[in-house]
Image 1: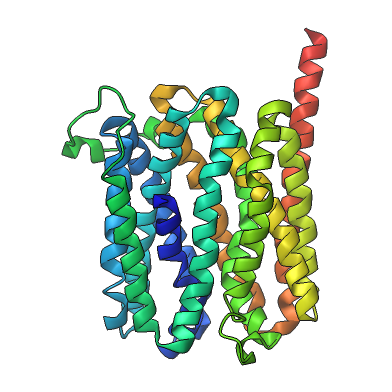
Image 2: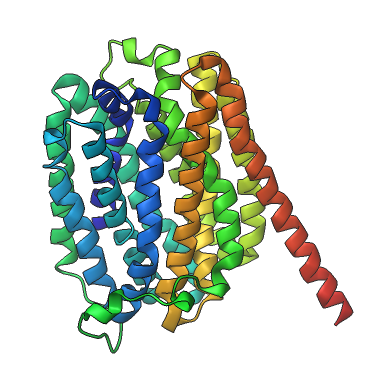
Length: 384
């Protein structure tokens, strides 16, 4: 429930930010809305990973949600492009904490043979938060104002903190916070065991940066903003693909527990490519939302399986750092996807196919990596 409320809180404002930035005179900088957010989220991961392993999972989650709560009250008072992006930087840094603590907490409380199922269940509720948040946020902005939307975002964030107050810390031998915990050495930035899932994460999540940056304009291009229904808006694509991901999240986790992580990830990579191409060439609402469903199925298979794989490969002592490493790959992929898609799209609807084609291409590279990795393992086992 805490994840549900947290993800609803910061996803609530995303579909409306391109239009909000345009009102401030920054329509040429839409690609930076997501990229700056993910940049600082990525920069925060080594800190959140270390603190998760040192002072506990729950304090890290509380800190991340608390900053999101405060920022919702500040957005309405920002009137400059510089101020807007300064807030996005801070907002991104804060959201680098809550998910890191959450996935480490989940890995702590479940047996290893049900880890995929548990990650699927946890992400199930976080995903519902993303879906409902995106549509509720756009509906509030459409019916009331963006200022009201920001206020509701803060309300969701504080509720996520209240839930955490009743949870028991899982980290044994936790330490009291010291300023030295904020000093990060080179070997504390990345966890080597998490490199394979991080590569797959980067190549597949690149497409999400495209979705977040370009989909609102694609929705306008197809006329969604002119719909008389408050629930058919720029955030509806997010709702459709996220709910589609819910269909397979828990089942994909269970399947990966039984048959292995990589077979599930291969199928997910293939669906990422198909979904991106379907959206990129959509010339009507039906095809547009069909692509959303396919993309959602890919996301539902990919995310919980990757974090379960990360937990499999890491030891308990460095679990927070391992999760943070995979999250760094996630932020890097989204950031580059957002920047490159913003430049490629350039507010020209004729560029939709090539923009989404980039995401499909990297998903194919992820599939090739997984296939070649399996071949290497098989070859080495044959020699043995």
